[in-house]
Image 1 (cartoon, rainbow, N blue to C red):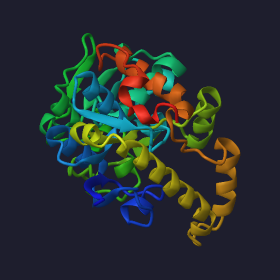
Image 2 (cartoon, helix red, strand yellow; image 1 turned 180 degrees about the horizontal axis):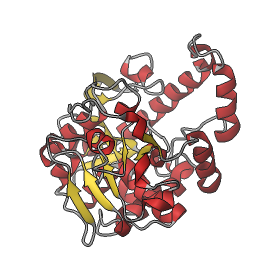
Image 3 (cartoon, rainbow, N blue to C red; image 1 turned 135 degrees about the horizontal axis):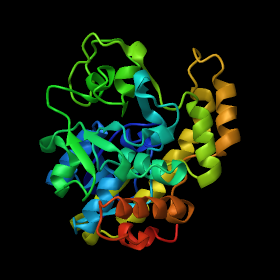
Image 4 (tube, rainbow, N blue to C red; image 1 turned 180 degrees about the vertical axis):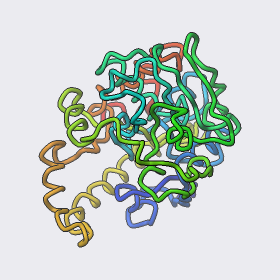
Length: 337
C-alpha cells in the first residue's frame, strides 16, 4: 500500500528534529516538512489550515476547538518553559515582587497566546494578583495576530490597550511607558537590534533601567514545579480534521513516532552538550535533579493536571465560553496514553 504524503509545519528542537529530518519515520506516512517560526506557523494554520499536520499554540487550539474549528490534537507537547519568569520590569516602577504588578501597565505579545495565559493564571493563583487589577497592553496587531483568526475581543471588564504600530514592548518598557513586559528577545541582545516579534527597533534605549521580575529564574521555576508538578506547556501538534477522519490511525502512528524521536534525543543529550559550556554536565545533572529524567512527558495521563489547569485558566480568563473537556481536545486513540 502506498504511503500517505502529508505536509508538516513545525519549529525545530532536539525532540522533533529526528522526524523533521527523516531519521525517525512515521509508519504509513511520507512526511514533507516545513520549518517555520511558531508565531508564523500558528497564524498560517489558524487562518488557512494549509498544512495537514502542524505545531499549534495550546491556548489558541483550545479557543479554536471551542469555536468548532476542524482540527484534533495528539498529546505531544514540544515546547515547555516557565512563562511567568520571562517578564522584565522598569526599575522606577516600584515592582519588587510579583504582587506589586497590581495596578501596573503590563505588556504581552498577544493576549490569547499561551505564554500570556500561563502568566495571568500564575499571577492570579500563585501570587494573588487578579487579571482585573492590571492594565494590559498587547503588542501584536490584529492582522497578524492569532486572535485575528479566532475572533478575539478583550474579555469584559479587562483593562485592555493596543500598543501603537510605531512602538513595541521593548521600546515602551525602556521608556517607562510600560511597567513590565516580556522582552527577552531584545533584552539579551545589543541595543538597536531588531526585535523579531514586531521588527520594531528599540532605539538608543537605557537598558540599565530594566531588570527581570524574577532575579533568580531557576529558583522560581523549581518553586513552581514543586508546587504544581509540571513545567507549563505552550505548544501541541494537531492534525487537520479532514485528514484525521480519513485516516484515524494517523494519530497513534504520529504519537508513536514522537515518542521514538524523544527517546533518541534523550539518549544523545549528554553527548550533545557543546564543549564551550564548561559546566554543562553539572547543569544537566541539576536539571534532572529538579525535574526528573523526563521534563517533557507526552500523553494525556501524564499531563492531565497541566491540561486541566490550562483549560480552567482559559475559561476563567474569558477566552473560552466553558471549560473544555480533555476528551474533546485529543484524538480518541491517544486518550488512554
